[in-house]
Image (cartoon, rainbow, N blue to C red):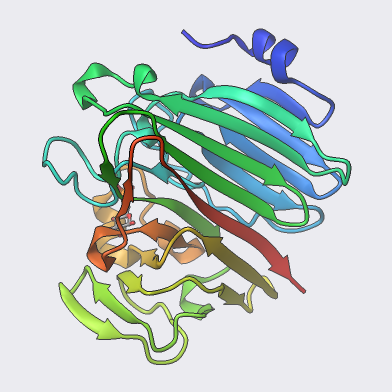
Length: 300
Ligand code: BG6
């Protein structure tokens, strides 16, 4: 049993961090400072929202999401770990168990420049035995400053080498997905999960159908050019050489019970991944540590 909201506020609350009851009664940390507001659910260490000061929300959340223990949240920033896509051992659902369980708040901090951060942690002891995890520790840090910085640290706390995949599976809010362009992946090779075929990106990405692609050899910056909201979202990253771009479009939206039929118009996912399909799984020796990071900001 985790801390109550009262205990969380006593232990880790501060003027710029409050713990409140969110949807489905999930405990949510509300970060708020001169740079904007961000919320993070303890369930899955899931970033639920990011609203830079004076701006339209940058992170998208489905109005049909479930907020139930053991279920993933639809929208925000799911932490996919220790596998991306299907379970390699075919036992459980996609994208790992880290997004299905409650994390513990390790600490909160206010930097001299006014940035606010929260760190949440998850260890093998906190995960249901059915998942049979190997010894590990994860720490997800969210920092609200001029950008939103999301960093997933992974430690191998066991005595054998492990291999994992994963992603920061960020859902971005757009005015009209059919009118945006995504730049930064020009000339990259990709695996198209809709067609089951390889391809090469020619020019900017436009969304005019279901898009589910794993771009390979990508470590640079992507931009979402959104004329409807008259803005550019900048998405930088480190610790990842694969980028997933996803919009379910019409038929897949209708098949997903936690996604509205028309919601595909207002979102697109750009995921900082360690994707198996892109030969980007990570190997950690005993005592080893790795970090996956996504840095999200608005350009003028
Ligand atoms: C993307 C995958 O990363 O996540 C898609 O490339 C998948 O194939 C999508 O549909 C959503 O996954 P889930 O498990 O959250 O429904």
